Length: 110
Image (cartoon, rainbow, N blue to C red; front, side):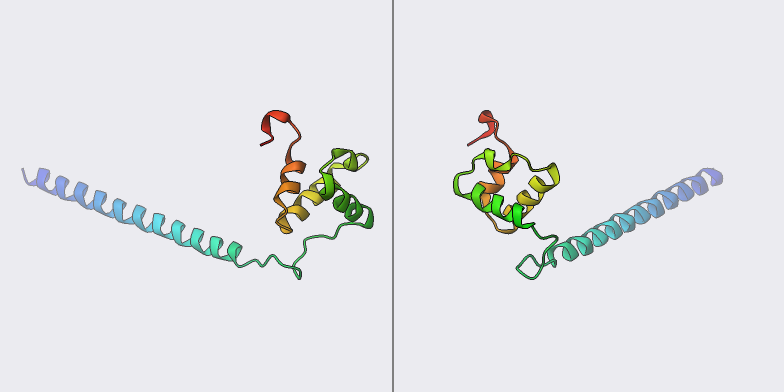
C-alpha cells in the first residue's frame, strides 16, 4: 500500500510540473508574439518611408489609372510593375485603385 501512495504522489508531481512547464511555454510564446507585433506596428508608413520608387512610366500609368480605373492603362506592364502600383495604392490609402488592381471580375466588384 505504501508503494501505491508513492506512485500516486510521483504521478501527481509529474502532472503538476508538466502543467507548469506548458503554461510557461505558452506565456513565453505569447510574449514573443507581442514583441513581434509591437515591432511591426512601429514601422512608419509615410513619405519618408518607401520600399521602392515607381519608374517614370509606372508613375504616369498610376496617375492615369487613378482617373478612370481603366485596365487598358496597365497593358504592357509586367506583373512586378502592377504589384508596385498596388502597393503604392495601399501606401496612398487609395482604396478604389487598390481594389481595381485587385480584381476585375464582375462577380467580385462591389
